[in-house]
Image (cartoon, rainbow, N blue to C red; front, top):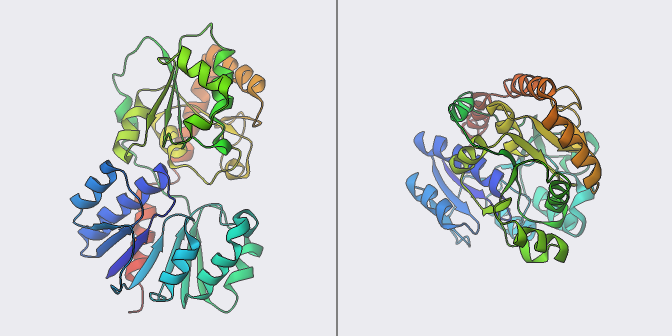
Length: 339
């Protein structure tokens, strides 16, 4: 089967997730072409799986279109008219209210498909019903899985600081500024904050935040985009995963960090409501409130029992979503297509 995998507008977690799936599909004899703008390390990954990467789609024919991110709906609507057999949408926040100006493009995209499958973290019945009426549609509610071997990566890791890590591109709604401001309120601790993700938005940060980063480059480290394996290695060097976003799907790094044995601190947004419970398997905090975040982090740093309880319950939660289950479902959907 010839698959076109769109990663237009995709960020690190999604790219890692879809390229991992691509390795599995190419190993099973399927032909994959990845559409998007990719950094060099991703291009190397794609070449290693004997797939190709393109920025534009020619007249080449494909059997299915797999959408890995909600970027470029106007382009995808035109592409889907030529490959209408299936669309797989792998995003957790597929909500027409959040698509804003792209609403018309997405309706056009969905209407150009004969058959559509949604792979999503959170099912929103009313939203899906509004544009799947009359389509042969299937909704599979499932987060992408995590490897059971990730906890081994942290074995023997020794350092003289407490590492706090976050995985997200530098964008206003990812709210890295909250974590940096909280860090300034915790100067009595030997903390190092590592931010994984695209750094194009660094110059747009508030001037005060940029001055803090410039004064303490060893305390606030922005390491840029990393592949899935590179991300795992960085997560393994840290002690706490913190996600400050005000608008989010379901970051893969949240599950991966829990599986590794990192306690979680997550913002109070919809993506984290059903699976993650404050005081049980994570701590939660409101966005745009660095004082609250700093107080919660101070409590976590000073309470070994709380920290260990969150680690244990986080691991138990992550075990519910093994990657084998996710990959099996994806392969069955792809290979079950009617040619």
